[in-house]
Structures are given as structure tokens and as C-alpha cells.
Length: 323
Image (cartoon, rainbow, N blue to C red; front, side):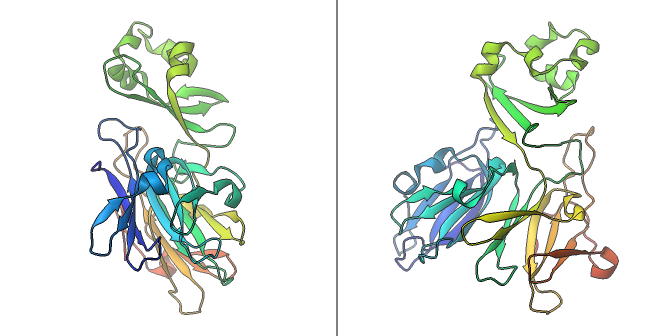
């Protein structure tokens, strides 16, 4: 197994009395944004695990850059189903067919393909209707990056300079045209052949993606896209998750940790968001406006941001986990 894993989620997926594992693959070292396989491991009852991915869910081998996952019995057949999210990935749903195999049901449970830079997933019944809802942490809106269905933020990658390594090109839209996000010096340090094409800054400043590469090069390249950067509450309405954007404060920074609790003991679930990202390019600046955010639930799926002076939270730095 590749060493770069993001999460391990235990569940007795085949009802044999022991805990099996979903193991999420995160990145291929030195080959971003290529992703390693994710796995389903079956427990034989003595603590030994067998790789059952090929028989249960072979698509896990190429699922993407997984950041988190959760087990939920969505169809109420007593067998836990799998929800997975990740970077440049949609939130995907996999229905457990009595521990024998998994079938994808993403389109059944999500009206739209919710592809994002998803980073964290929390599961709880926030609206007291007897089923589990989702809080999905994302990158947020407090940066230069913007994304939508019509103008996604994309990653185009290939070995453009034929040196044996992957060249990832981040692409964002400016005035409805796709431009490389990297500046000239940054990109040309990676792709030496382009130095002959862009000898000065002026032509590079106007170059779109199609100006950088030939149609053949672009057709051979692979692409990933994100259309949603906001953190979201997905209300489970039985047969479908309904999307509700979390308050503006939740979009101040990337979310890497979510803690569900009833902080005021009113019988309704609340949650805390934490995150931030300081290990980032200077031109972007630190995205660190989340000091620990408390959201008070009313038991109906609505959440109020509790100001810092009221919540008493004062986190600093990049938070990856909390309890």
C-alpha cells in the first residue's frame, strides 16, 4: 500500500462481528495530482486484514485524492454505506449490497455533482428526523480562488516537457477566460521549453491555457475540476441530500476539523469549525481568519454563528484536528 493515506474508517461492513476498514488514499508522493488507490480491508476476526477492494469496490483504485469518509446506513437495510470526499473530487455515495459488493449511488443522493476541495466530513442528525445529515468542510471563499459550474478551478496535468515527471497546471478564470494561475517565473521554472515562447512578461500576462500548449498536448492531458469551494450543510431528506450553504463566517478559511457537540445542552446539536492554511504561496497570503467557530443549531437544520466574544474560542495557527 502507498504510504500517503488520509483516513481510516472502521465498520463491520459484512456483518460478521468484526471491524473492517476503509482506507483513503491521499496523494502519490512526487506525482501530484495523481492519487494512490483507496482500499476496503476485511477483518478475518483475528485482526488480520485482507484486501477485498477488487471484489467489493474496484473503482476505489482510481477514486481520487481522498481526504475523508464516513459510514452511514442510507437505505436502512442495516448495512453501512460509504460516503467519500476529497480534493478535486465530488462527494460520492456507495451503497453496500449486503457486504458482497458496493454500487455507486451518487446521482441518486446528490442533485448536482458537488466537486470541490473538500477536506473534512462530519455526520450527525442535526434536524431530529431520524437520519444522518452531513457537514462538509471545504476551502472557503477567502482567497483569490473562485469556482462555479460554468467557471471551475481546474488542474490540468501531463508530462508536458517530456522529462518523466508530472507537470500540474492550476487554471482559474479571469473575465471568463481560463488562465494559468502561476506567474511567469513560477511556471517557467517548471517548464523550461516555454521560456522560448514567453521571453518577456507582457505576452505571458495575456496567455490563456490554449496559448501555453498545443491542441494535441491539451487533448492528451488529464483534467480535474472543482466547482464548489464553500463549506456546506447537506440535509438528508431520506432519498436525497439537500444543499445548504453554511453562514459567511464558515467561508473565511479552509476547514480541516469539525467537532459536533451540544454545547448549550438544549438538546440540539451544534458544531465547531477549525482550520486555516498558512503553508501557502506568498502571493496568496495566509488564509487564517478562523479562530475556532461555534455554530449553534436549532434542531431544524439552521445554524447561527456564535461570535468569538460569546463563544470564548480563540484558536491560532493551522488546526488539523480537535477533540
